Amino acid sequence: YPGLMHNDSRSGEEAAYLNDFLSGHCREVGSNFGATFSLAKILWMKRHEPKTFEKTQRICHQSDYILGELTGDFGVSDPSNSLKSGFNIVRDSWPREFSDLGIQHLMPEVKASGTLVGTLKPSLSKKIGLNHGIEVLSGVTDSTAAFLASGAHEQGDFCNTLGTTLAYKGISSELVHDPEGVVYCHRHPGGGWLPGGASNVGGACLRVFFPDRNLVELDRHAALRFPSRDLSYPLVETGERFPFKNDRAQGFIPMHLPEEELHLSLLQGVALVERWGLERFCKLGMPACSRIYATGSGSKSDVWCQIRSNVLQLPLIRPSSTDSAFGVAVLAGSKVFYDGDLAKATQGMTRVDREFAPHTEFSNWASEMLEALKRECYEKGLLS
Image 1 (spheres, rainbow, N blue to C red):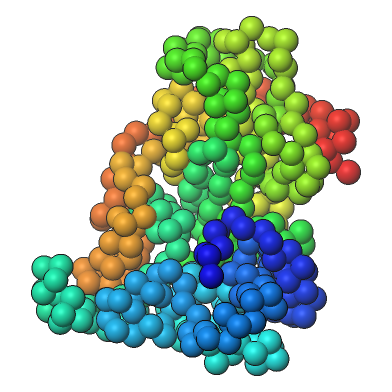
Image 2: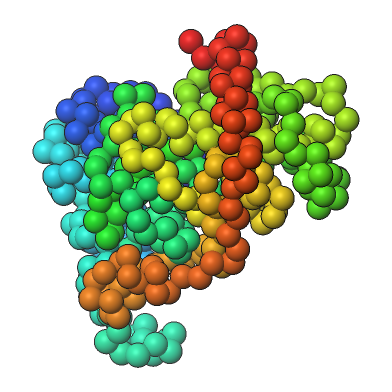
């Protein structure tokens, strides 16, 4: 059967059913199932493609399959990759209700991230040129691996990825529960939790309004003109997830401005949404953010990084490497070289490209602008 992509949302009815059927599980782990979640897709396949599902002998996530190819054991997963398949990260077990769904026998054994799964198969060792008997460890999702690569390692650290959209992931000692189900937590492989969320606001606005412009030149103008009082909520598609949930939300952008001023308004707008999101995490019980590790294509702009630091009034650190492959190397390195201490491994193995310090003279301006943005969102009906 053709594969269902990560953003395939055909299983909306199944997600709604699971949120009711597994309501106790959802309350315990602090999040609900979405239409794109693995478990909703598994149930969709069971309901809509029964002949295909009847042939299923094992449910494997992508990383589980790679583990199986490396070691010969296709029955092992990790809490990070199993989260959206319904693994209870509080109890470290699959929900007992899975037996009623008829899938309990298909689910993999879940081992903590960084746990020894097996050794490289001899036949594969010869084929790819790696040493026979090399140890293979359980891993994490790509986004969690990128977080580990960033260098974030203390409670209060956030790694925010600014690409087409804006994704947050922070470190908390306590599990965060979001009544709206937008923020959900992964387990931190080093202990504690990784609450995350994502706004639909991000760098997409620059691609829409300045598709053929030299952004370096516009950045130069932005640096000279900052700060501005022009407000924007630079959402270019319908619907917002975070810092508020509104499936019908429409952004607002001051299109009457000259392009240099419009560009600055967009940069500031994204940064203000980022600050709003951090406030939302605090309201959900997380400790105040102490610093941002900035990743994603938008973080390549020095000017935008400085604007974000000024708006957030936080240090913003751009790591040298944010590759997911490097992140899992840090995880493995913590087991081999740092006696299992992931924080020490992160400090020892990651490097900083550049750090941006906030200019405190913009503190009052940034607070006033965020309150003005919230009022504007309320008046335009984005907030109820």
